[in-house]
Length: 132
Length: 331
Picture 1 (cartoon, rainbow over the protein chains, first blue to last red):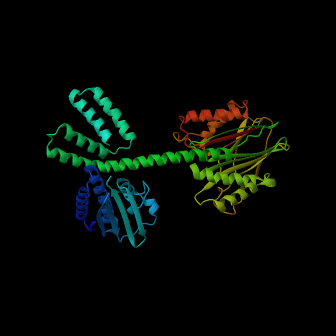
Picture 2: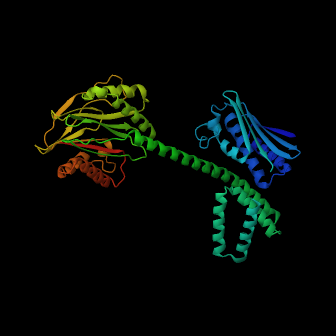
Picture 3: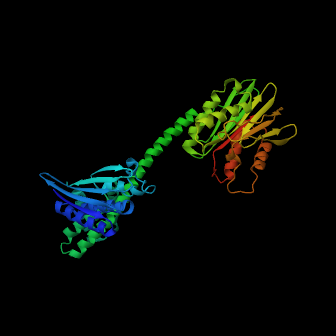
């Protein structure tokens, strides 16, 4: 297992998180299209932090065990939190409330997603993609 | 994906060789297949990139980078495309639910027009959307009386329909008070005020036609005034009645009004969907209605209602802006 984390404070940090994500995805053996998907997912999550939580981190984990290869992206922030997680997962919600932007899209780019959030404390979004 | 790539490769090679319209037509059909299989746009670019590398091995590194760039761009499109698709699916589900709800409403709020020996009654009620915001309720006993409530919920669609069920329930539980129009409105007003959202208002015209005494008493809660055609005088009068919309204040009082009905008289009760003319601001809808009725007064009540609907719909270029309901009672 290999884990990197990038603190997101400026837009350049988004670029850095993307870069690390792409490297790790490539190392695991994801093809170009999947690399682009993983990077876009990272970008969306980092952008949400940058726009709505102001400060947070993106963690990128590369898991390589026998017969299983996957990448885990975790976005952690101490932002305002999400009141109704179920709503954020719905398409079309992004227009009405801050943090929802692109979450269902990220969910579709990746294979799994878990959101934990407490209002006033922050949000953790963990998403994974397996190499097939 | 590998199989699609093989197909794509063959098609692309054919096109590069012949550049015929047939090749492009085949490509179009193939695209249809891709969309059916939910293949994302970025995957298509990925396939193209791989195929290019196979069929033109001399492709430069720069070109391969350019494809990678395009893939990045297409991922974003793909995301939007998939969101769109999931919304379409959701919409189909909503449409289905809506259809079921509309069917339930139709059964629930079905109006049966009473067939009486001495009084001719007709009705037309056409919703502009799936669900009707107008509702007509009759209560009658042959040779004795007929009551009619014509209601219009301010607001449309599902909320209006739900509110209407409440009105119907209220009207059905009136029992022996149906003879007093102001009292009926006061009861329904309390039901609505208590149980329906603040933003929901209902207008209602309630009439009680005493067949033996030949009087028509009525009250109105902010509803479009009804019309009375007197055959003897060959003229129309407006059955106006003051009263607040239902559901605004809990203790609203309504005024009692009464007219005498003579042989061949006609009463026309309608909702504002009948009198509202979108494209003709200065147009007097009531003049049109009275002209149509006067000219065709020998038709049956039902024929008159249908005629009114047809003529007004035509006047409005078949684009009515509101639910259309008219009830006609002829003695």
